[in-house]
Amino acid sequence: MIMLSMSDMALGKVNPDQAPDEEEAEIGNFDFIYGPQDNLNEEFERTEMLMSEAFSHLGTRYRSGAKGPSAFDCSGFTSYVYKQMTDVFIGASSRDQYARNTPITRAELQCGDLVFFTSPRSGRNVGHVGIVVDVDPVTQNFTFIHASTNSGVKISNSTDSGYAKRYVGARRIQL
Image 1: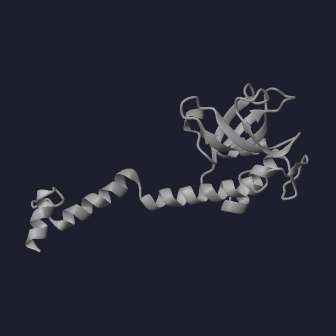
Image 2 (image 1 turned 180 degrees about the horizontal axis):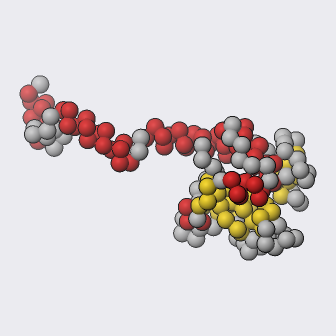
Image 3 (image 1 turned 120 degrees about the vertical axis):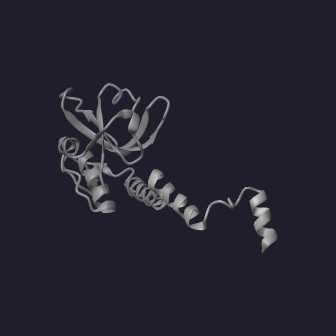
């Protein structure tokens, strides 16, 4: 036992001047400073389940005003996915979802956030919403899953000509 302790001290694994309670306190400080690791795992699992639910509807047809699961409009899709996976009501329309939820910058985007675009017809007002799938941290371009009027539920890129100039902003859902 003594040899193990001495070898541990020689390797720098044990600080002889530090009591075991102090070591435990330092470990506790890690959680205080960086947040509990359990929260990261829970957040990852929630996002994974959310995206799995969203992907399960790829190809589902579009119908104006539809709330799923056999057809969706854009806000019906995002609302349905969040309600199924989190039991959180995020708003009924794209404008409502934009107004109700926590604003974030494009630089803060992450998987599961909502992204908003103007309506092709109005040009100024929020008229379309999708869920972020992936973000390029360098360019801040992103892919998103949404219910498209022409193709139903599909994945698009923020650089696509139909969306690049229509981006309005993003929101994070507080769970």
